[in-house]
Length: 439
Image 1: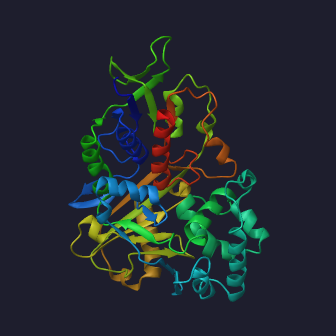
Image 2: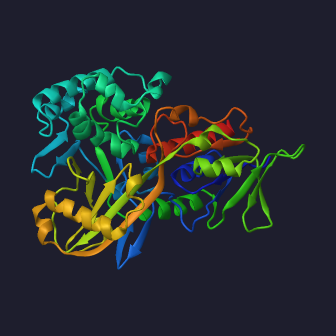
Image 3: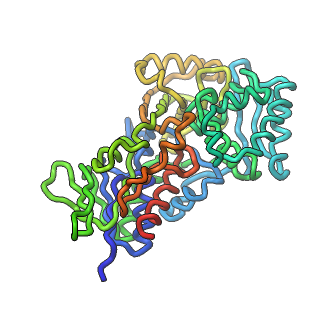
């Protein structure tokens, strides 16, 4: 009997994970990617001899599926993972503090950091600790939690504007890509419980020591080919037709091509909007109504070092997070900094020159050495549809419709994995999609 033929549409992390999973299960696999590269929203480009990523991506120790993919690709050694969580938090007024864990079990591992958190008053610190203990009791799977916003819940638990801005949004923004006032409590509870409150070491932070193309896209090509997967780049799919009577096989039509690809099973690992277009037989799927949130990154090549941390969170400033990418960019002298802005829809139409100027000035308020630094190069990267919009009510939209054809499954960070739109969610969705179609 011939092997089951699986076609995976989309070469992001979800598609890569799905293709490898299907090959491991003995399927004959074809991966279609419309770009000239794999990696999806994690990609890199060279400019003036340096490597730029489209955005800075981190992971946590609790991201077990993503870390498993790194192992499978043979690139885990190209990342750093903290032995113990330490997140510096800066402000323009010179206040420096850090969120770091102790050797105590959860949730006591963060008690000292919260009690000494210099960006809040002692009263706010105590109230925030009480709110964190209350959040630990929440069940992220409770559908009622998806009906309200995190900010609303925080206010009802004694959190004022200052605590929300200087503490809760510090975590919510980069992980959920929305402010506390707009994000679903269900997803927020999942992030805080899984990453910080339930396990002491879950929130240890990891990052890539190389350009993202060298961590994901390039090694994925090698791993897929070794697994026997046929990878077709620059090959956009046009539509997926359900099997005709007696054929039992799906027809995947290729754009700008007269030929189709036949498949016994199909995994659609694309954005929700593109997934809806690929399957015209499914009318107005709920997931097509998922909104999106933007991410903007301002990347600066400086003639000198101005920051002593590998990364830092920032409060009371337009800067949210800043990362040192000097080593991974290939820069030999000076420093390469990336300012990462989440929930960045308001910055999408601002010019590069304006963003570079205003955020360079903001960096001067944080790092005095920046006032004497010269900007050698600057690039602004923008992802308008970086993540799905994790607003209240989004949980129901992430589920596949009941009339989805047998033999087709969805994958992507936006799918109903229980996680926000992260690299972990993408990998989990790809693995689960293959289990569904090959079960």
